[in-house]
Image (cartoon, rainbow, N blue to C red):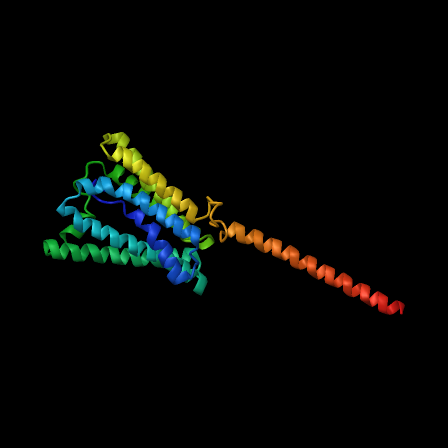
Length: 262
């Protein structure tokens, strides 16, 4: 990704919870709002390095990546909705979306080629390896990429099937941070990126851990509606109800014994 393009996966912090609320009716509690506010602070740190170097030609790519993030967030939550409502297995969904993605990708290449070159040369050039010297390396690269990406998508589907789509936020924030570290080591660092980006990524990761309740803030009532707190409260209420029923049953048995003795 170019230096002047904002990392689109950061948008998942906003749109995956939003679509989860709209489609899955997931409750957004106080600690979720705090997490989003913290995340916005981290996003500001990540926006500054891009904003300082962004140019006019970068506006359209950034807009496209924004809509890509919105679409992918909707896609992730839609999968969970389909699984819950229609009980379709993740593997079947993977096959359906895979076929659909291949169709849209080919259609997109064809339309782009017809608009820009007025023929299918762009589409054909993508599949033309006649000028490649080492076809074996290219073939291994494509096969490895296919296997890795297939595994990646299957793991995402399984994570969505067994957990909440918001869990994807954590992993998809770590990925661009690691990529930035690798690129910085390989090509060197620049100011103020080397200062602001680590701060921004750490803040965003911290906020995503709060949202998914992997970190629980035990002040100002922020832990009141967390899953762990609710489960503990339900457990305590169950114990109290069972105790009350036991006491009531003992009192009833005592009254029966007293009546019998009369």
